[in-house]
Image 1 (cartoon, rainbow, N blue to C red):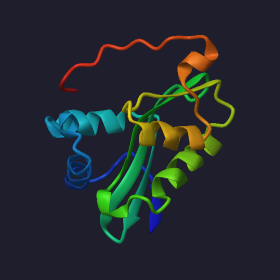
Image 2: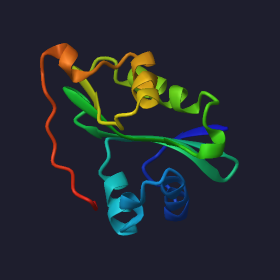
Image 3: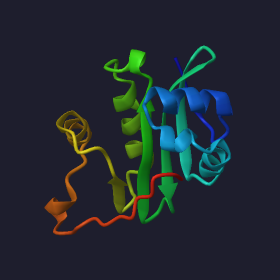
Image 4: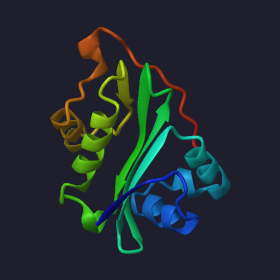
Length: 137
């Protein structure tokens, strides 16, 4: 497996990965998905030969805030430490950033995954998170 830091990932590979995760809102408009990647702060992808098997995508200024926008690992590669490795690498890279934020599914296994990586529920900081989430990007 190879880790590659690049915002430029073939559209077909992105589509396969996002569809595998069931994140069809992202593949509804592939031009917007490509724009989102080109405007990202940082993207780290994982490859098995020529197959994209996972990635983490960050947005933000890299100084005061970083948002973990996407963390995906193809189903057949899950539970092999790839997602943990991706998040550990970016947490190390941005260790001096004041706020690292992640919006995620409200499922126990997902919340447990991020807690093991050192992230906490926002209520632990006496703050509240607010959002407007639209069906398509």
